[in-house]
Length: 441
Length: 144
Ligand SMILES: CC(C)(COP(=O)(O)OP(=O)(O)OC[C@H]1O[C@@H](n2cnc3c(N)ncnc32)[C@H](O)[C@@H]1OP(=O)(O)O)[C@@H](O)C(=O)NCCC(=O)NCCS
Ligand SMILES: [Fe+2]
Ligand SMILES: [Fe+2]
Image (cartoon, rainbow over all chains, first blue to last red):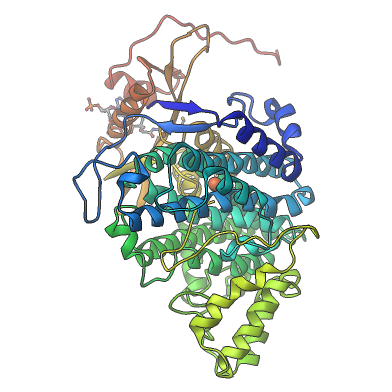
């Protein structure tokens, strides 16, 4: 394994640094205290990494077996334009997620959790930088009227609230959002990066391995505090209880599921050799992984409730509680545990958009009753916010027959053009999302 | 059997194997350890999976500059195979895959330190071809 390291031309590098000073003001604190938390790790560096020695043959789709492309101008215009969309979307979400994390970073109760999130944010900045590197290294003029410089400028101007990709428009309300976002939304990122590792466009493929290595830590940055919170909750601590965890999982998982794009789509990416899996397949694996996280959180909870149980006994207790609906002495009631919300719960895009399906898969006839169910099952600060309001307005219209589901799904992002955290923010359109959807964090 | 890199989803399963070996459930210890290796290089630390369940793990990394050993060296530091799955070459297969990954990171030597009071572990490493190396482990007991 070896990688080559590149720095963007000076003016672009400085532009990213200026962006960092504004949106990641704790960066210097991270660097100054690096040794304390990561004594053996190399210092963070803002550079693009490209993996050497990767497979040079297209691995899927119509051109399987042919050599990979090293220049966008050699690709079919349709294919290159698909790819360009993916690179820009990827770049925007990397920068966008930093803006979201920054909102509540300071509220962490644990210094270590906060420091891990801060490192993760710096790595997201590097991921964005990596994508800018792809935009600047190649000539995209056959598929875009914008120069590389204009594309970079557009990306660096965007603000929270102007993304069209669901998860990146939702404000964080507490540090629980930082953590659950890492565990669930960065996990979508892992899938996208893994798929793009086989991209027919070699510079994209070569950009993935280092990003993926970093992504593995981002997932742990989410999962480890969640596990600790589950244990603390079992011991009666009043901070992040199982109920709060459940509500945040309910808030984010549907957005993660939707980031894979419509479950019936994704074929174009496969045909063009840009990704090896269709949306539905990748989404289903993703959902199973989230389910494993939830299961393990329950085990951790059960074991903290009754320390005499060993692993095997705890698994049996979990089975009795979840499958048998039993209350178990010394552990608790089934509703004390958490569960993975149904795939159709709280959806606004894809096959199950606007369906009235509850967290446990139960169906509702009446919209207002469904809304009350959502309010009971989502974090209070979230239901008081504008994303939820936008969703409810559209849900009511769809079920009153005033709007068809597809139009409502397309309308969700347009709501983002207003507002943003910064009053002077320009309402730039952030990314174009299509049926092939989805990007990584 | 499938050998693959360790990931956040393995935390509970590895803690469970350790519990089966040592009798104590120490999830926080394993979180700290595993996240360390994930952060350092998530592709070299491995788990073995049978029918979707983790049955063994091997954690290590390539470092240079330790104990004056300047060249990149693969360090194997933590391992465990589920007692119900021992003697099926799971440990060996994990190790062989790890050496491969060490090699691709420029390491020419693999090193480990074994407590001679754990004959099981030293027997395993000797079976894999490890020999005593001229770096002596010294200890000073500060509580005496
Ligand atoms: C050591 C250990 C990893 C071996 O796992 P395993 O999957 O059963 O080992 P394998 O089947 O792959 O055996 C590989 C070789 O090691 C040898 N070996 C394994 N256990 C041995 C033992 N106890 N004594 C001597 N040799 C042993 C085998 O004979 C085999 O040799 P071969 O391939 O030449 O026939 C496992 O016993 C274990 O997890 N022990 C506890 C480790 C521990 O305490 N970890 C916590 C501290 S880090
Ligand atoms: Fe990222
Ligand atoms: Fe990430």
